[in-house]
Structures are given as structure tokens and as C-alpha cells.
Length: 116
Image (tube, rainbow, N blue to C red; front, side, top):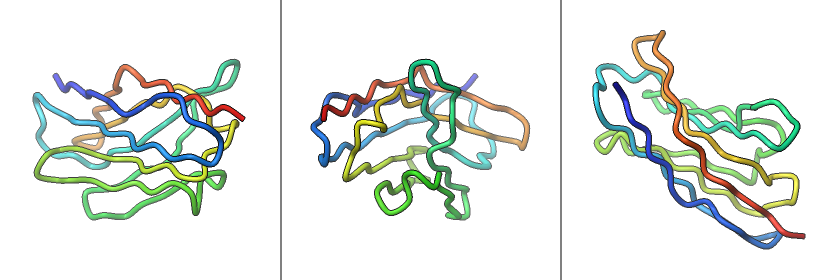
């Protein structure tokens, strides 16, 4: 099994910044990608940002230019630096790991609340 432990969520004012971290441990063989998703109340879970082991990144249009995803391969950790936060960024943020092209794992989620 793979465990994903997220940290860094919290309450922040609009325009502020937060940094999320997600550390993976357990039966890790070949990671394809890691990423962050979010789910706001009453909405579907959506991709925020992803990064492959080769360093390729992709972002949701709504966060481009404000969020930056990065990773520490040696620590099996992925980060999400969030800046210029808006009230619409309020959601539960989930870490995701894909390995061996087919095995999908999720963290327990961390709440991000942006007050306007």
C-alpha cells in the first residue's frame, strides 16, 4: 500500500498564500505522476495541478500563474505553492499519486479556506 500524508492547509485571507505538501510512503515502485485535486462543496473533484517524474507540469486554467507545483523525487514529496488566493479556491485539496500506470492513490484531503 501507499500512504499519502498532506499538510499545509488552513485559513487565509484573499490575496494570501499557502503551501501544501504531500509525502508518499509505503510500497512505491515506479511513480508516473503526482498531483493535486480539489473539491468544493456541491462540486465535482477537479484537477488543480500535476507533475510527472520527468518534471512536466499541467495546471487548471483557473490557477495558472498563481499556483506552482514542484516535487522532491528523493523524498517522494510534492508541493503546491498557492499565491493570490481567491475565495473560489476554497475547497478540500487532495493529493494524488499514480504509479505503474494503473495504480491510483489518494490522500485524506486538507481544507483550504480563503476568506474574502
